[in-house]
Image (cartoon, rainbow, N blue to C red; front, side, top):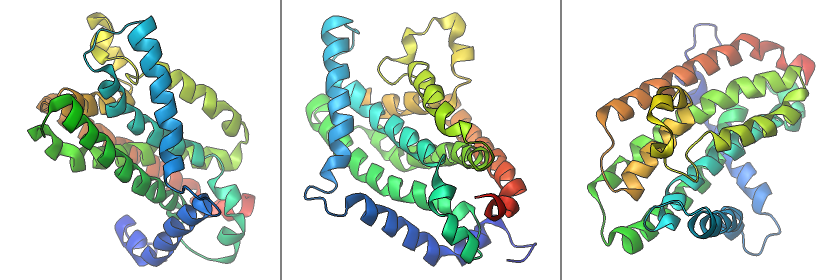
Length: 262
């Protein structure tokens, strides 16, 4: 790799390795599995079912078709959860590869996110179809935003995964601390409740959590079936790009010494 080589050029140069990693991740996950991709849906659907029963019959969040609200955001949260968790062990898992082959270390993170993205696209395709048929009775215009929302989601989550992977190389504590952080983030994000339930005086602070903004975009577009405000959409696009660029800069600062440590 040359020093002047740009980020996109590096990724493009190693696109075959990236493709191989994505395919390999999916094959390993589903090998010796009779149901294959179905298992990817079972766990989040079970969680959505439990949350739906609890918050529509016990706590009783006042939303029509509460199941549609949960579906419109939960798979987004699940994508973030799994991708960020992967960052804690990605380099330990591929330590032999990093020592024997010269390639940009970020390719490992991109490969993990890419394989999870393929699963997410299949999941969200089913979700939006079900919501369109049984909740809206048609396809709202806001569904056209799906590619933009997926792009924001990918930039945001990978932007957080890169520094998490960096810290994990130096400190094993990250592996133990991240589940606690993600559990806290789950309750501080509108996964099972709408952001409108947060007191208005606290919403400015609440939306400093970019996951809250991301989930709200999905709720607006797919549950409510309306176009999100330009302020929210534009703000989240800027936030996602910023998080990604900062996360990538942190990662690249230490990437050269990863093979010496893992």
